[in-house]
View (cartoon, rainbow, N blue to C red):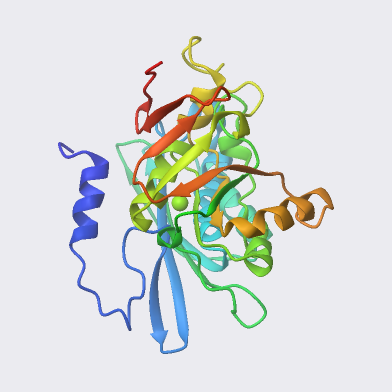
Amino acid sequence: MIMKESDFLTWIYSQNGFDPEKVPVGPGDDMGIVNLDADTPLLVGVDQVLDGVHFNLALHGAEAAGRKAMARNLSDVAAMAALPVGAVASVALPKGFSQNDAQQIYAGLRKLGDEFACPLVGGDVSTWAGPLGISVTIFAKPAGATGGIKPVLRSGARSGNAILVTGQLGGSWYGKHHLEFVPRVREAILLGLKYRLRAMIDISDGLTKDLGRICKASNVGAEIWEDAIPIRPGAGKDRDPKASPLDAALNDGEDYELLFTVPKGQVEKIMQDVADGKIPVAISHIGTITKQQTLTLVSPDGSQCPLTDGGWDHET
Ligand SMILES: [Mg+2]
């Protein structure tokens, strides 16, 4: 494709014109939403994994590839604080693929789906001369006892909101976290039940890019504090030896952690609940949403530099 992936997506987002009564959320969030009838929203998402891009078949095996395809989709459900209900998969098998390997893909998809009560209810298999590709389409509904948790969009961040993130960031390929991560579906629903989530995304392309997506969708900016970013031990080691752990945490991606914003007044309670074990995941308060529509990294000494898609610009 001559067009850049991000330009293509921006073009798609500009081609809307949906009836908001029927399609409350169109392309551009972690999942789209269609109304089956006035009171019944259905969340839909699709995501693919390709050999050589998202996994390495020779190194990781077919079951891990299938698992990752399902995990990425479940992570998008988590990003909406929604409840998965089912999935379908489409698999492009390389010529000469063994039946055993094909069954391993299915096992990887199904086992993780079962863990989240998300059955694989259909699919399609074709054989071709290219590499292995697995595409999963996932369906979800609003979570909560009576579906009371409204799906959390990227567009709800407001100036003054606190920015928080679960887990640790960076080095996902080094430690195989990108294959083994457990989608934060349960954590997201718990957060949605207890706090006023304003905006949320799962970090697939790195903190800088995905925070940028929240800011763009919400027409705001953000300031993040360098010393508050939770860096995974070993982050940066897996690629350029000169890459710093901070750079890895900002830009590696494939973390599949939840990045979200809440009104500032909720932070103390969240941190207390994490300390008391009421929220079973580490959460870091990493910054503030700003009115000014830029992304800024603040160093411990107070100096600031702009964060850009390709990393951050050292000006000092
Ligand atoms: Mg996502």
